[in-house]
Image 1 (cartoon, helix red, strand yellow):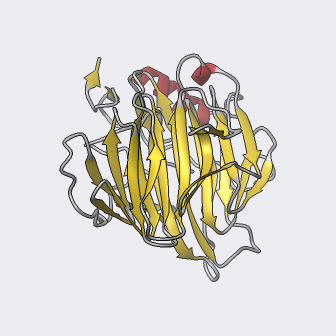
Image 2 (cartoon, helix red, strand yellow; image 1 turned 90 degrees about the vertical axis):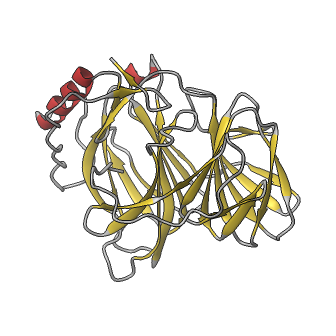
Length: 324
C-alpha cells in the first residue's frame, strides 16, 4: 500500500486516558489513499513513531465497495521494509515485480519483503465481496536484511492461540509458544484477538518487548483503559502479561517487538538510513531502474513519486529524536 503525504482529514476518538505513565493512547488520523479509500493512520505519530519494528499502521474500513471500485493502488515501489496485509472482510489482489499475482482473503496473510527494492500494486478485484476491512502494516528491516533480495510469501493458514473466551490468530512471531510461519528479521509479534464473550482474559507478554494494541472492531478494555475503534494504545516495555476485556465479537490487533534501535528516515514508500539513500531510491524509481522491476499483469502506469521537500529529510530514532 502506498504511503500518502496528505495531512490528516480528522482525528478519531481514542477512549479513556491511561493512568500508567508508560502507556500512551494514540487517536487514528483519517488519511485519503487515492480517490476511493480512506485509512485511519495509527503509526507513525509525533508521540510514538514505532512499536518494535512496526513502523507504519493503517486500518481501513469497513467500507461498502459493492458499487465503488474499492482499493485502487497502482504499481509503486518500496525499499527497506516488509508489508504485512491482513483482512477481516473482503478481498484484495496483490501483484508484484517478482511475478506474483495473489489474491488475499480473510484468514490469509500476505508478507512482502522489499529488501533493496520491489514494486507492487493492490486492487479490489472486479468480482469482490461488498465490504472491505483490514490493516496494512510496515515492518522496518534491519541491516543487512534491508539490502537483501526481495521476497513475497502468502500464508493460507495461520496458527491459533486460546485463553478462555479469547482466540488469537498469530500473524507473525510467537505468542505463548504458538508460532507463525511468516519470516521476520527482528523479534516481533502480531496477533488478531477475537472475543467470544465479555469475560476478561490474560494475554502473556515478553518483558523485553514493547507493545501496542489496536481495536479494529467493537470495543476493548486493557488494564482498565477503554480503547475504541480507530485508536492504538501503546503499552511500553516491562510487562509480563495484560488483562483484556472486550465486547463479544470485538477484533483487537496486538503488535509487539524488541525496541528497534536503528535510526530511520521514512519518506513516501521508502524506509532508509539517510537523506541521500532515499533520494537515490526516488531517482531510480522515476528512471525505471531495474532494482524495482515491473509489476506483473498490471497495465496501469507506475505511480510517480512526489517531489522531495526543499530541506533535507530527517533521520529519526524510535522516540522521534533527530540524528545527523
